[in-house]
Image (cartoon, rainbow, N blue to C red; front, side, top):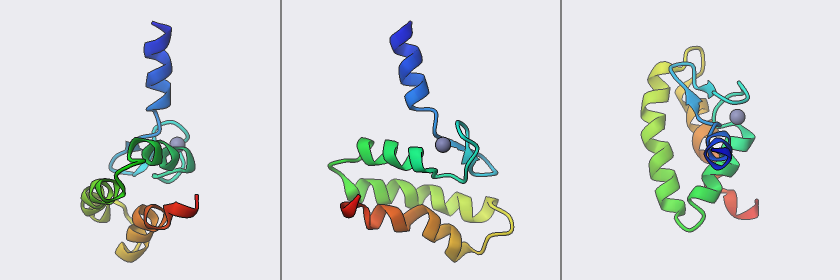
Length: 86
Ligand SMILES: [Zn+2]
């Protein structure tokens, strides 16, 4: 029970759609903690991470209001591409 709860908490930094805010901390998704989770999840698969984010980006560009598509793209992808220095 405690283990299940702990893993639910670890996985909590996921997007709340269609606002694309974080379910856990209410920041813009991907939030700092959410990025760390994804970095861990895709530690050996940077291409897989970018493909995953690009898939979400297609939806987010249409759903996020008031943000130009190129800024949404930056928010989703720039950190993942430059993640080596993290
Ligand atoms: Zn978060």
